Image 1 (spheres, rainbow, N blue to C red):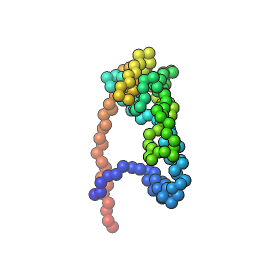
Image 2 (cartoon, one colour):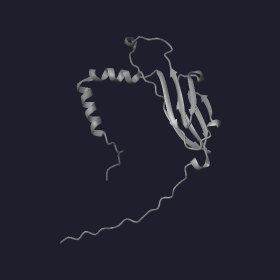
Image 3 (spheres, rainbow, N blue to C red):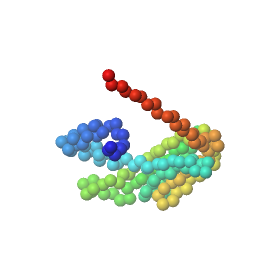
Image 4 (cartoon, rainbow, N blue to C red):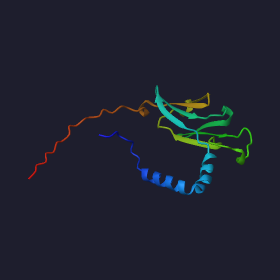
Length: 156
């Protein structure tokens, strides 16, 4: 039996895209360059000790560059990653770092204590802690295993 591979429903579309990129590379160069200009910090969220913890990677930023707000049940983290020095586009040999304004939003669970939110910035990561109501904390649901039905096939 072969090894399991992850389910990728768009595998054929990815193959077609690679074929087009190799046949017409100039069509995709400008598109890729535009994508590099957008900075979108990576975010993770999890529950720890009855609190929702939201962490966002913000390399190269300072706390003064970031704003954390809550409106209703929506947590917003926004800011801007600016160029420290101006380099002309034609002077780049390779560029993967992106710059620009960003805004990430997350809907908070019902019962979140939005008046007790804390935000801490350390080593390029902002960590926002939101106390949650006990009802909002996930509960583990037991899984009941049922025996498989065996079907007998008779040959005639």
